[in-house]
Amino acid sequence: MASPVRILTAVPICDGHDSAINTINLEFIRHGIEVVYLGFHRYVGDIVRAAIQEDVAAIGISSYNGGHIEFFADVVRQLRKCGADDIAVFGGGGGTISHQDAAIMKRKGVDQIFFAGTSLTEMVDYVGKHYGKRPKRRANSKPDLALARQLTEIEETYANRKTKRALPSRKTARKPKVIGFTGPGGAGKTTLIDELVLRFLQRNPKTRIAILSHDPSVIGEGALLGDRATMINSQDDRVFMRSMATRGQAGGLSPATKSCLELLAHSDFDYVIIETVGTGQEALPFRDELVDQTVLVMNPDYGARLQLQKIVMLDVADIVVVNKTDLERAKAALSEIEHRLTQNKRAQQIVATVAKRHRDAGVDKLYELITRADGEAPVLRGNHDGTAVSDRRSSRRRSASVLPAAKRRSK
Ligand code: B12
Ligand SMILES: Nc1nc2c(ncn2[C@@H]2O[C@H](COP(=O)(O)OP(=O)(O)OP(=O)(O)O)[C@@H](O)[C@H]2O)c(=O)[nH]1
Ligand SMILES: [Mg+2]
Image (cartoon, rainbow, N blue to C red):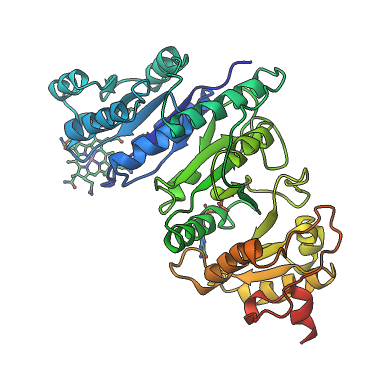
């Protein structure tokens, strides 16, 4: 089966006209297209970087606020500058883009502008016909371009059910730490990762991070890959982010995840972060030693105490984050989850965060747990079969909200 067409959509500035992009995204997805949605208020540079990393065939821009001639042309110009002129630029803006404007935009390299009155079917057909086949990219293309295309090739291998290709051998100076984030839909995984990325970038001017972010899809169907829309700090040249659809695989990851991860692990990053799709009670997404450290992000609103007994990831996560502790039920949730973790009798950590708040002390603590485990002491590397792992940092000073659950309990 052929891989779905992948496009990226974005809105430069949102002045209230958001129903067009929402309608168009949904229509594309319904017709088997994978849409990486970048959201609103995006600079040209962010759009171009995202399109390259996501290896999309085209960028669709919705613009109702004026300035479209310059904006679209600048996207084309920057793509060319980066050697990614095979990525087409198209879009629309209802009655705000005139035919004369569109003619100028096309002369500047824009592929297609759709006007008010064009049917959704016509636009879907256009995308299928023009962006389905990818031109071959030059062998000597820039690192991000080459890496992005290799990830696509891996995904295509799985989509075509061919044997996995051997990974190209690379010599890299560093071996990244791989951290897996999982948890129920909407718990705040992406927001939290984005806040952590800010800390990684600020505290070490050389750190490079890769993010593999998953959203659900059914085989042969489209997907809304929307995690990028939540990312603000991760739109940075030192962050390589790739959105993946699960393409029919249950459990939170895609059939191609492991191979993509192997490639990223050999691609000069210091950290590789994986975000699963929003998972259910039975999910254990990181079983094949995919990751060095697992973080379960919980929403305080999981139901009653009984529900906690059913969440198997609570047995194996190295760190459990109770996010959204600004919400009313957070206090009870923290104490219930903490109690649940004591049953495991392993050195799991529990952290309370408000990821949507900048400079949140809980996120700082999570950052410390993740980075400290690197050099100073290899704690928190749980065996993924759930067996106990000892905590060798016992002498280190800890704050109350990051104590191992078992220890907090006995206080
Ligand atoms: C609905 C609407 C609104 C709604 C928006 C609701 C929402 N949540 O989106 C509301 C009421 C909020 C609104 C407000 C305003 N609006 Co208004 N609005 C429209 C209207 C009638 C339809 C826009 C729409 O979403 N249509 C549905 C989409 C699917 O169709 P479409 O817009 O025709 O787009 C087609 C293509 O361009 C293409 N397309 C669009 N985007 C993309 C992206 C991609 C990737 C692709 C492939 C294709 C594509 O898809 C469609 C195919 O048929 C248009 C008229 C028009 N047709 O443009 C005016 C229009 C855009 N608005 C206009 C104005 C002036 C305003 C206001 C300033 C009014 C005011 N004085 O307050 C405010 C500004 C917003 C604000 N800051 O408050 C003017 C803009 C004039 C101009 N030249 O700049 C228009 C053109 C109306 C007019 N003729 O005067 N508006
Ligand atoms: N109240 C509150 N809302 C938050 C917090 N963190 C994130 N959110 C909001 O929760 C919603 C979901 O956040 P995401 O980061 O997209 O959650 P997610 O777990 O990545 O979601 P999926 O990828 O769809 O599973 C967004 O509206 C966030 O703004 C928080 O600490 N408190
Ligand atoms: Mg997410």
